[in-house]
Image (cartoon, rainbow, N blue to C red; front, side):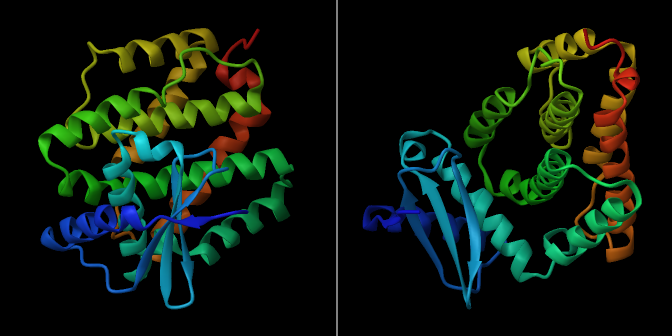
Length: 249
């Protein structure tokens, strides 16, 4: 992977770190910011020896969400520094290992379960992000979440279970902060998705949405592990039993 440093972004990173600190979420480790021209997602953070690196895509530099992205990745770093259970890779491996041993997991299922775990992490860290943002920035973020919502299923039960979880994550992200409006586009896009899947999809969506809305960063390790097990078991059941989501054809 070719990654290049961009000195012009130092001010953006300093701005974001200062915003975090002002709101009571100081970052103690050194953080660097680099650009990966080949990156297809907006960005990510990774831990290195004694420091953290935020990597952003080249196209993200022109996005109105660049500031929000930096705050989001810094919130992940903050959770990591605080030793949050939601950012404990060993816990995720334990839960996935238990499922693999008991039920077996195909590679595609495992990939989507990791995505599902990322949704939970993101819901939690975004509590910080929305606290740090001002009203204008929250409105920009709100429009960003609309783009996460699928309005039509693919017909593949495994992928559709993942899309259902992503819709629930996006809707819950706004409901969690009192920003959701059932008269807006997000609501109708999700309603269309559920209608195509069938009646069973609505109950599954409501459970997932409730899980995301109710998730707490202060869950202890046992509570988070139990929540993940139930969450993943429901996801696997949806992936493997299309009948639970109604007629997919």
